Length: 141
Image 1 (spheres, rainbow, N blue to C red):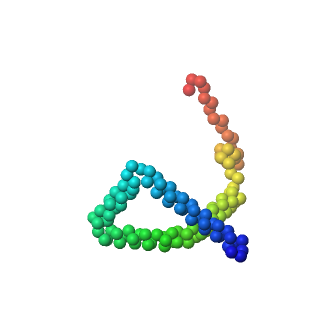
Image 2: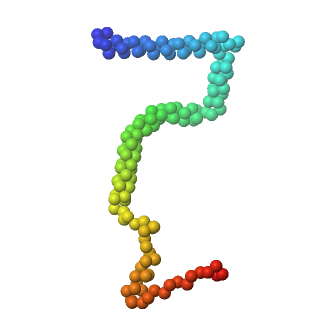
Image 3: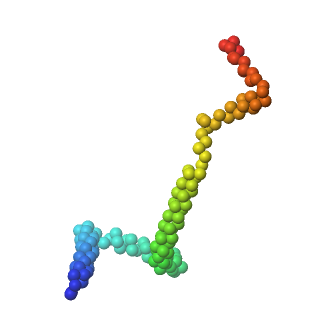
């Protein structure tokens, strides 16, 4: 151990071994303190063996195949993360740009200020006709 890095690596390695040893020691001590130590573990192992015998070697090979393919599926996931991030970033950028362009190029038309009824009056005035007032509604109507 010549460098600080070597020392830290050595200490961390020992720390991990002590932690794993403590966990295993606790489990063994817990099982030893029971009235029938390790009986549940033995029973579970027997059930697993009978299931494997009933399923046959084909099921066991399928499970081994799934176990072997797991690192490659994880690697594909890790590789696809930056691609998915770039896609999401591109989508957010394009969406924000479209919103900005839509806001800056839209007309300032507001329905409250449309004055659509005023066009009819202008046409009658241009022809020189007088506008006839609409009959007023009375309470009897």
